[in-house]
Image (cartoon, rainbow, N blue to C red):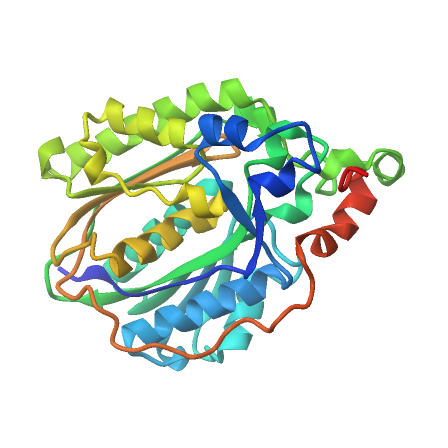
Length: 362
């Protein structure tokens, strides 16, 4: 049977940092409040679009895999914050990479999107439909953040991560998966004015309709159950015991959700990868960024049994039991970087303040 293994990985984090102390000048909050409730210390603000973040993460993943863009059969971009609705972000990324032999598709399952993309691409590889896929999670969430809303202003950041999935005869790859959604609670995490259902005159009167809105306590309760149940399900489907799991790489939404999920699985905290303090919640990008950093820090060993788990707006959830391949070192790197920016965090957010209101206290 053909297996699908991860052969390349990469991330792209914009250089501008929004710290908790910066947020103290924007909204009624402080570092202790944010850290104790979320585990977040800082997050990134992008000066480029979602597709550009995705492209650089993709280039780094291709270099790590030691392949050319023309070797890719499918570019899959998971995002809920594309630069535009038409064309897809994946089409822009495919062109920027020079992946001339690849199809291109976006997937929007919000924070679960990368796992939806990884599971879909792996299934296509295992079925023999394609040989090589580039799966990207990329978000520019701060575009939709109302910085007068303490409940969301402290949580989200921008970034991208990517993996290359390739066909192989060697053991490894996707061993089990789970995907689900409960649309009956869609309004506990949404941006209701961001689509064609919104009356344009109403949107002109109330820009806040476009901002991400969240019922935090309800999301927390459902996220812990969804991630824990889904992760336990794929472990059982894979024929593993919980003790077999070498590393849990969860969606980085809130450290309390991560901790509760690990307790639900009875996992030693040493087996859980957490980097939320540095980047906040980057939605579909959190898991590929975390996987890249886990590999860079040698937390992933050859043949490691990894569980990925996520939840997001929808309310969507997904999990995957993944056996890593024999190679955990990149075959190559790229020197490419994002273009420089002269802007600081407040100038980069100036348009946001003008649209939603708020801004630095005077």
